[in-house]
Image 1 (cartoon, rainbow, N blue to C red):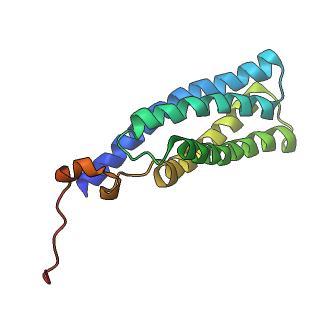
Image 2: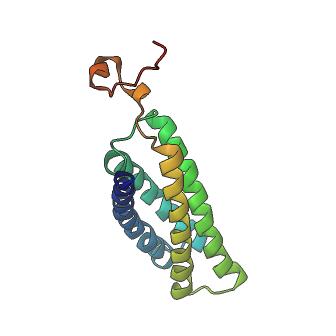
Length: 159
């Protein structure tokens, strides 16, 4: 049980580190696109988040969950993109609600809504990546050449 908690703590730490870098790409990036370039609030968030998504996929694959099996990079990236899209939708709902429903369209309101959306989306992403994208390695994933390194499975008493 303790080793399981250590594993989760290690994954959360790595996930948070990569997420912090993705946050630095996404939130200031959306501010530059919104207030520097003049794009709309939702377009700015989408473009900055897509750039952050590409970075975070490769960082998670090669650092956070590098010890997990690889279900095929295209399939894995597709699932990653789908769950990032859902996380982005959560973020956009927060920004859109603030901008269009509450009619708050200043930098403080945009950044506050973006932060709430990022936090909620991040919780969803961690769960989804861990459950559906980066699978744990199982005995059946180990190639035949490494069979001698596998932990023996106890035989039944009827053998």
